[in-house]
Length: 235
Image (cartoon, rainbow, N blue to C red):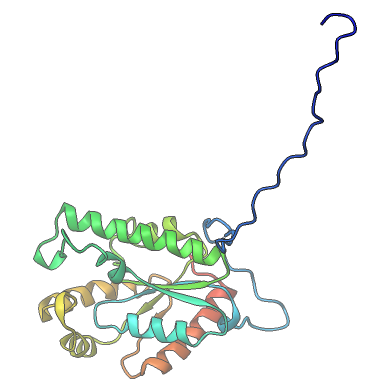
């Protein structure tokens, strides 16, 4: 620049423009992670399962009343609670649904595994945000890797499994009231019930709700969960 020439005007630096306020109602959610083992109850008394954030897996054969009990239990808790049904999630698949009643194959196996993984993902997210979960599934004791082992991988070691196992006559009667692809033949119900009997001696808590209505079963479930929180089952 020649001597005496006017200097070029350099504007002063401008402060950064703050981002526009978020007007979409976005709420930041904690990410879901594996569910840890429930805290031991205080020495002053037993924990109250109705006001504790829990992850519960309700196991039983078709016709055991899992869905009815799970819904009632979730509806009557003092803390937010979600019911996640494996069958409901599995039936999200509409076109191409692989119904195991038409024959167990790679597609039905894959859809069951996808449903379990999806349920576990949902449960972890609900629990990370303070919402308890109760899941229901017909888990067989003779398939630990894809049964309980799968749920433990998908949800975490803090999942509390409880078996709902009424007598065969009761299960057959309840199954007869079902409709659609959830109603099984009597032979299939008997076969599944016989396999479920393998849970006896497993160390998992078992509720025989043959003589209990849904509210009564839910009360017994709370009693079982008190013991499970105080001394989590080994599985």
